[in-house]
Image (cartoon, rainbow, N blue to C red):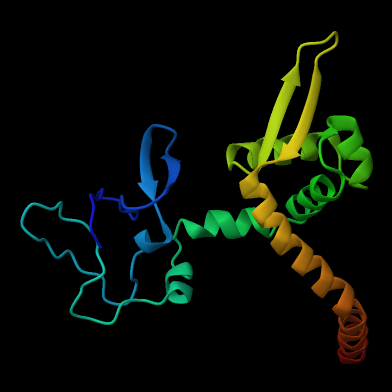
Length: 184
């Protein structure tokens, strides 16, 4: 792995910018996850001394890296694993550009506060575009970015899987609940 690193659990190497402690901004990627099995502080001439994946040993697989508490890809998993994210992305994918109230009505059960927070997070992550149109009062519209549309493809697969497996999950829930009652 080439590139600079900082004396923190994240090394500077990749393509996604993140803020560390709201002060230091570094570039990170999934390859910057520490190898929790056998991390070393190997130093090559002209490089910073920081945790690295040693070339001489087996490097961690992406799945193993994800298990590390300091792996930055956990931010992505957290964002796309949120039910409101999937529902907002789906609504914008199906309907295109929507105003805040239209989006809140489309995504049933979401509060104004939760929708505001989710939209800010999605805009910050580059998934949603927010456009304020100078009218009285100001009109704000939300739409998916190209990056957001790539997530919409995955959201469609998750939705399809959900519809295909809801009966199985309900049956499993019922079986589990009946076993829990008989064990009590």
